[in-house]
Image (cartoon, rainbow, N blue to C red; front, side, top):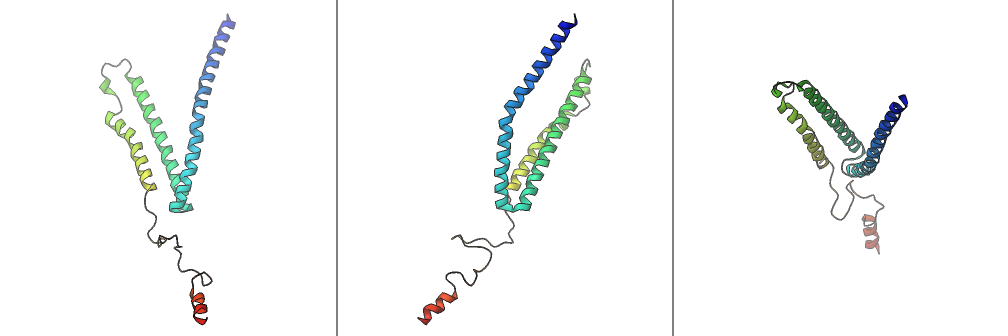
Length: 159
C-alpha cells in the first residue's frame, strides 16, 4: 500500500525537478546574453560618461530593474489574494484592489525603463572642450616637443 504512494511521490518529484531543469536550461542563454549586453553597455557608458558615472548609471539601472521585479511580484501576489478572496463571492467588484491602481502599477516599469534609456543618450557635460574634427586632442595645446611647434619654424628661419 505504501509502495504505491511512495512511487507516486517519486514520480511527482521527478517531474517537478525535470520541469524546472528544463526551464533553467532555456533561461541560460538569456543570462549569458544579459552578461554580454551589460558588458557592451558598460563600455558604451564609460566612453560617453567616464568610469564613475557609467558604473553609477549601471547600478541605478539594475536597482530600477530590481524595483520593477519586486513591483511585478507584489502586483501578482495582490491579484492572487484578491482572486482567492473573491472565490464564491457574488459581486466581483468587491475586490480590495482598485483596477486603475493595478493598471498604473503595471505601466510604471515601462516609464522607468524609458527614463533609464533616456539617460543613456543624455549628453556628456558641456564643460569640457570638444575635440577637433581632425582627431586632435581636446586637453589643450600640444607640448613644446611636439611636431609643428615654434622650434621647427625657428630652425627653418635660421637655415
